[in-house]
Each structure stands twice: as structure tokens, then as C-alpha cells.
Image 1 (cartoon, rainbow, N blue to C red):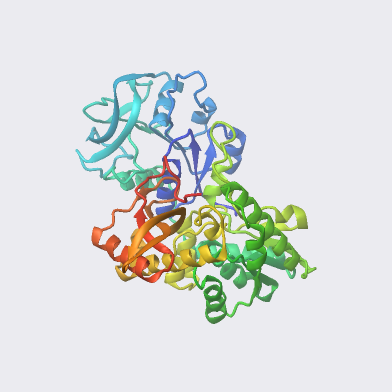
Image 2: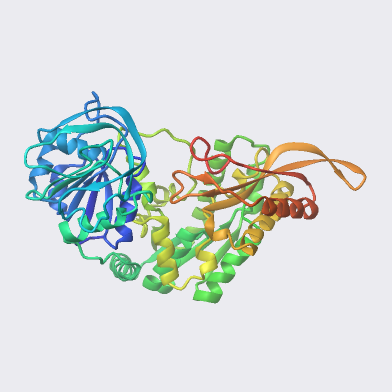
Length: 513
């Protein structure tokens, strides 16, 4: 999609880079992340309204430290350097950066000096968030100090004539009290952006673009029933009507009543016809005896492609495939320092475009999850559906640890349903990024009535997160856990012990497999 105005964020490896992009978009300005070595000619060609240099884990003087083309400071485009980005500005423009005697991490109070556009209206002594081991000891020429803290005498700098600014702290994190104000000052006063990145504008522009692209041909949507594919289906249905073919493959690895609920929701709310393929027996047969998590994912991915391909081939005039790819997937495919290590294989319909000569339509490849949810609400998809927690592509196969059987899946489905209903009942479902149950390949001794039991152990998992990249375990009230544990053990035959997972990501992942 063309963007008449945007902010480019050059990534130097900060854990907060995605957060910078999200904060800018929350102010209704489009932003995109590019690697620090992004071609200068492309930046000139794209004419962004501003450039942000992100933080990063390295020192600007490290031998292989990520760098930037020095000519970027001569383009006349406003620049904001954050942490590592500010130190780069100093290094390239004749200043001096040195290791700090004490690494500064955490909250500090900012002392605003003078009257500068970037810190306009920022309250003196407000809290900011620090995370750095180096600091600037000598300013470049034509730069002035606009803020300091107790441990950072040069905490924020500006060169108004060239519209170049630097912050030693992170305005994008919630701990920086006036972070939004500082970002808005940069966006609206310095870069002169307009707040026009809205769900309504996105919907209109996408419908128009898809109509032009597809014309009177057909497109196929792999509709899993998750938030991303569901919003994509409703959005593209507005553009293509009956020329959008939606195929839902029931793998037998869905949550309780999920496939039926998906079909019902689309027919009743949007009059969208859905081809419902029940392939559960095939998936379970191929997963028989398999316990390795990566092998499970590969079998499920390959089987899904096979089933989907067989169904899609019935529509000879379909030239396009709709995928719900999100912006974090795109960002993660371009790392700051070469190819990233694969943590786990992601299951989607990625193999289909090459095999069937489909042209891809990825309406959300520039969006974060929360933006997709906003668009779904704007399109009239029921809130209870839109606010559902993320669900992995391989479904319950990665939540039944060890061998997968229909019996073990059914046990997990019942337990998971009790857990999720209790979250809704207590009004805490929306406070949690993702919650689910995991059936362990472990049995324990128990007592029910006067009899000894030897049954399954179930783990409950609930985390808070903003984008799934990092996550912390949710602090339930003990009475809630007691209530859920009792209900599961009493109601679900085959479980006699419930445990709660208190691991964060990193070092753990959100899913167990």
C-alpha cells in the first residue's frame, strides 16, 4: 500500500523497536521498521516525514557495531535518535561517547533545560526509562543539551537548524511518563505529520486496491477461524463478494465446538459461504505415534497444504490466495545481524503459492495484531470473536504433549473450555494476552472417593504481553486457581492433578511445544 506520509524506524537491534512503531501508529501516523543498513537511495525515494534511529544492545565503538550511512544526516529529514541512536548521532557528528562507570537501567527523573520543540510541555522531574552502558561525554558542534538526569548530564540533545534530536532514555516504554507527548512533539511539530492512519482509511484503501488487483477473477482464503484470517475474509468479501472462496479445514485439532462456531458466525453475521472440510481423521492418522514437536508441526503443515490444495483445485479460475500475514512476521524475517535461528516452525499456508501458482494477497502484512482487531471491530465482527486469544496454527497438537490421540484431545478440549469460561465469568479474559491448558505426558497418583487413581496432569498457562515477543505469567488470585482446578478435576474424567505455569518469555516460550 502507498503511504503519502510515514516515519521510517531504522532498527539497531533494540528489544523496543516494535514498540516504537506501535506508539507512532497509536498517534495515527504510519510507521515502518527497516534494518539499519536500509539503502539510503530508497529512503530518499520514499521521502519519509521523519527517521527514528532505534536503541540497540551494542556499543557504537564495538568492532562489528551496526552502523548507518553518514549521509543520512544531510538529507534535511528530521531525525530522532533513541539511546544507541543518539550515541550514533554524536559519534558521526564529532561528539564523544564513552563507557559509563555505572550502567544506568531503570527509572530516572528528567531535568528539562531551556525551551525546545521536542520536550515542549514535558513536565520537569517527570520519570523516564533508562537502559544504557555508554553515554555522551562531549557534544557535537551546533548541538545543545535540552535535558539531563542525575547520572546522565547529557540526557537529551537537539540541533534545531538541522532538525536532529537525541534521547538517552526510551520514550516508547510505558515507564516514561510523558513518552507519548515527546513522540507526538516529534511527529506533529517537528515532522509536521497529519494523524490519518486510521482503521477506516485502511479499510477503504484496501478494498479499492484489491478490486483493482483481482478484477473479476477469484481469490481463495484459507479461513482457520483465527482473528487474522477471519478479519481478512470479511474485509475481502466487501471487495470481491462471491468471487472470494473461503475454505475452512477442520484438522480435528481445534478447541471445543470451534469449527461449528466459525461456520455459524460467518453465515449468520455476514452471509459468507464457507466450504467446511472435515479432515480430522486424516490428520489424526498421520500424527499417530508422533511425539517430536517439530515433526508434529511439519506433518500438520504438509497435510494442511495437501487438503487445502485438493479443495482449491476445484476452482480453476482462482488466481489469488489470501493470507493473514502480520507485520511482526515480516519484521522477523529481516534480522539486524543476519539470519535468525529457528525457534520453531510456524504453520501456515506458506507452501501453496509456489505449488499452485497463486498470487498472494496479504492485506495485513503492514499491521500489528491490535490494529487487525480494530479493523475487525470496525467491520462489525462480534467483539467476543475479535478479542479471542491467539491460537497456534498446529492447534491442540502442540498442547497435547507426547502422542496425540482423539481421547487425549477430547480430555484437553473439555479442560480448556472450563478454564476459558472461568476467565470470562470472572471478567479477566481481556486482561490476558493468551490463556490455555496443556495436557502433559505425565500421570500421577490421586484419590477419588475411596479409590486410588493414576491419571493425567494438566498445566494451565496464562500470560500478559503486548505482541507475543516477550511475555510474563499472569498473577491469578489463588481462589480463582482453586475454583478452576476443582471444576476440572471433578468434571473431566482422566485428570486428577492441575498445575500452573509461572515461567516468563524469555527464557520460556508461551506455548510448551
